[in-house]
Picture 1 (cartoon, rainbow, N blue to C red):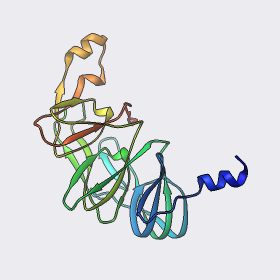
Picture 2 (picture 1 turned 180 degrees about the vertical axis):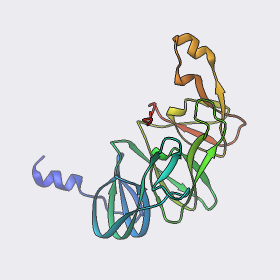
Picture 3 (picture 1 turned 90 degrees about the vertical axis):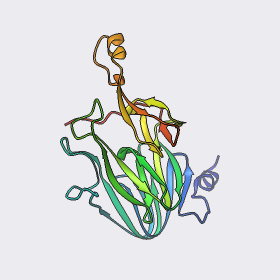
Picture 4 (picture 1 turned 180 degrees about the horizontal axis):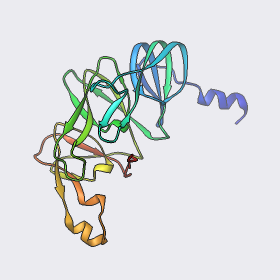
Length: 221
């Protein structure tokens, strides 16, 4: 294609939605007020927009606090003003979810890309999860109404309980709460300690779990 055709083919799409996908890996936020986004995810913006770091719900530390013992977490920022903000995260695929009033989804902090100001968020810790530190497993609870954008490595798979999942491949869940399961046979089979021996166990028949075809490792300090 010539230069004009290239420009025409890749210009932002027209639309009235606050959250709109330009492609599977790039989110266009039509900003008129404020939105919370993962720090470092802004690749471009137009209009009158300002950005600032935002404290976590735990207080004292900027961003989503995942583990106090290691300082591990996902920093967030607040974009305020009018214009368009374009967000992406390491070529991960973006999933847009609309939450009704009171509807909740719990998401791995590293997989939260952005959410509207109408969405409440809170750090939730599930104690005594096998394979995690004494602090437990910590995710971000997002409660509607409003749109949230989460990211996955590749296409997600949505499973209904009862199901067990690898914590490193688990992106989010809703309507269910995980316990823990230890499968020693996996360690014995591999011949050494394996993270796969520690699993999240979702029991009952309600809700759903989102997993991705990728084990996301978080560096330990």
